[in-house]
Each structure stands twice: as C-alpha cells, then as structure tokens.
Image (cartoon, rainbow, N blue to C red):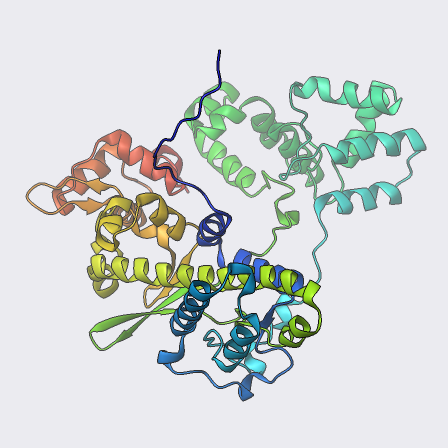
Amino acid sequence: MEIKQQLRLSQQLVMTPQLQQAIKLLQMSRMELAELVQEELLENPVLEDSLDGRDLREVQIPEESTTIDRQIASDDRELTTVENKEKKEDIDWERYLENHSLQAPMPSFRRGGDEEMPGVDQTLTRGEDLSHHIFWQLRMGDFVEDEIKFGALVIGNLDDDGYLKIEGLTPEEVVPKLAEEAGLHPEDAEEVLKMMQRFDPVGVCSRTLEESLLVQAEVLGMDDLVIQVIAKHISDLENRNYNRIAQKLDVAVEEIYDVAQVIADLEPRPGRNYIVEEPRYITPDVYVHRVGDQYYVVPNDDGMPKLKISGFYRAAMQEDPKAKEYIQGKLRSAQWLIRSIDQRRKTIVKVTECIVEKQREFFDLGIQYLKPMILRDVAETVGMHESTISRVTSNKYVHTPRGLFELKFFFNSAIKREGKEDIASESVKQAIQKIVHEEDPKNPWSDQQIVEILRDQHDIKIARRTVAKYRDMLNILSSSKRKQYF
C-alpha cells in the first residue's frame, strides 16, 4: 500500500444550490411559489416588494423593454467588469446597489379595486363534521360514564360514510373489542350502539349496509316485506335480480319492484352530508387569449410580489465593514431567486405556446379534436429535456377560451383509427360519455355494443376491456346497473 498523487481530467454534473433552487421553483405550483416568496421576503432583508406601502393604482407598469432580462443582463455585465479588475471579495457593492435602485422592478399585472375582495361565501365558518354532531347527541342522552366512553370509541372509528369499521376486525368482532376497552359488558354495548344508530342521521354507526338500511326502515315504520328484502336478499337486490327475490318470498314481481323503489329512497351513506371538504382554489399560471384568429399566451403575475433589491443596505455596507460580508451573501441569494423566478415564468410560457400550437384544433373546434401528444413531442420542439417538461406541466393550470385546464390534460396517448389520424384517449372517453348519455335508460348499451358504435360511427377500433377501463375512469356503471326498471 502506498500514497500517490494523480492528475485526472473528468466531467461531471454538479447540482449547485442555485441549480437545485431553480429546479425546485420550476415544479412548484403557483400557491407554493407565492408562499416561498413571502418566506424569502421575511428571511432576506435585501429583498423587498416594490408594492409594499403603496396603492396599487399608483404603481406604473414598466414598458416591455425594462423587464427583468434587461436588469439581470446589466447586473451581469457590471459584475463581470468588476471581477476582472478586483478580487471577488472587493466588489463595489455600493455602486451595484445604487444602479439596482434606479432600475425598474419585475413587472406585475395585479389589479386593484373592491372587485378583487373575497365574497361572503368564502368567509363562512367551517361546517360541523359528523363526529362532533354525533358526540353532541351522545352527551345530551341519558348515558353513564362507561357508556359515554364506549360511544366515544365508536365515534372515533367511524369512516366518512358514517359506518363503524376497524381494520382487521370483522363486523361481529368490533363491538366486543370496543366494549372491552371501555370497560362495558358486550350486551350493554350492543344496546348503546342500537341507540346511537337512531341518532341523526338515522342509520349512522352501523357496521354494514344491511344494518343501516334496516335501522332506517324500522324508524320510518316500513312494512315487513321491505324489512325481509333488506335482511335476507340485499345481494339479489343489488344485482337487480327481482325475479329470484319474488320466487323466494312467493310474491308477485311487481311488489318487489315497488319494494326496490322504496329501498332506493333510503340513504346508503348516512354520513355523506357531514363530509367537510376543504375548498380547493385554483389560480391559472398562464392565460390563453384569442384575438381574431391568433392565440396569445400571457403569464399570470396577478398577486405575485414584484421583487427588487433594496437600496436601504447601501448605507449599512458603508458604515459597518462587518455587515458588508453578510449583505453580499444575501444579495447573491436575492439575485438568484429573482433570476430563477423569471426563468420559471419564461419556461411555462414557452411550453404553453408550444402546446397551443400543437393543439390548435382543440382550441378552435373542441375536445373531440384533441390530438395525441406526449412529453417528448414538446421537449423536442422547445429544446428541453422531458423531465423539465414534466416539472413544468405538473400542478400548473392554464385559463383558455375552452375553460380552465391543467397542462397535463393536453398529454394523451394515441388511439389508432382506420384510414384516419390517430385520436387522443381523452377524446375517446368523451365519445363514450356521449354515447352513454344518449342511450335509452331502459335498454342501455353494453360494453361490446359501445365498441361497435365507436367502430361504425367514429372509426375508433378499441377492445371491450378498454371501454370498460375508460368507463371506470369516468365513474360510469355497467349496463346492468344503469338499467332503469321504473
């Protein structure tokens, strides 16, 4: 063993912090980017929002020629000239800050006015969820301490539909398990559960669908035939095998039709009206405007801070030499952040322009003319890598004359057509949805019949299992469950 010195020349990709920041910003959604910018404004004293403390109507939008490109280019030329003459630590930051303060900030197109304020519907308090609603009724009831403890355990194990389920346990094992934890006898626990199942909404805290429907039928005072069908023939009822139910119960099939219609009015998901869903707000990253026969892509800078370098720290650098090094580091970080945000905006606009160009027929004629397109098609056109296109189109939205779409929406696999151009899979889904919408409810099309309609009317040749897959994606039931008997 010995120690040697070797000189070797090699190339390797180094992920600098600046490059990592640019990649991170590229794949962020607009809301995430706004939060990151606000955090940087708090942490980096060199950064400031040029709109702070001023009325939006007093801010003048700079001309196109005074954008961030011109600003950064001027900064780069100045820094390069200084670095050639002096050491990196001796940069004339005072002069840099003075020039920076004289240049225009990043452009922003925010609109002011009362019309931008949120509506009353967006200021409402959060609705009451199912757990609080059931627990309030439990406390108002005549229950002892152990029964309230058991009821609290039941409420804690309710799913979104209001059913009592514990993973790994069968419905028969749930109550004894919770009764043991609460220190309550299993028979007493069953009685408490029956009382809770009659809380509002009726049928909640049930262990199975049959149990929930039975509770509702009993509370509503339905006849014995309805209760028998629910208790013993729920599977045949689900499959709409009315003749079999009529034979087993020795009644006319017309009566079973009436019973099925009554049961259909019951609530299979008692807790559905208490599901509290957080609102999801979507703000488009870009707008596509149509002017005449042309489409123009405009970035959405509405609501984004207009970042610029603060000139306040010029005096601090002159007065305190120790602060100079700290301010220099923050200044470099601020410059890279502004550069990365601007590069992100340019990349999104460039990719969107390519999508608009390739999907021109969609914007002109509608979704049935959506063309198949993959990430590679856009990557080759704009001269970027597929991974970059994937980051750009993730969680980014575009507002078009056809509606609001995620950029990922425009990427679809190709479906072959006989004697015609390939068609996008999304267009095939829309065609299937239209066929199902126009069918006879009492005689719905089967998957095989949909395959034949697509082949004969749209020249689309796909397999039956593909139709079934697309039908599941569209949340369309099978033909047997779509059929209306009443």
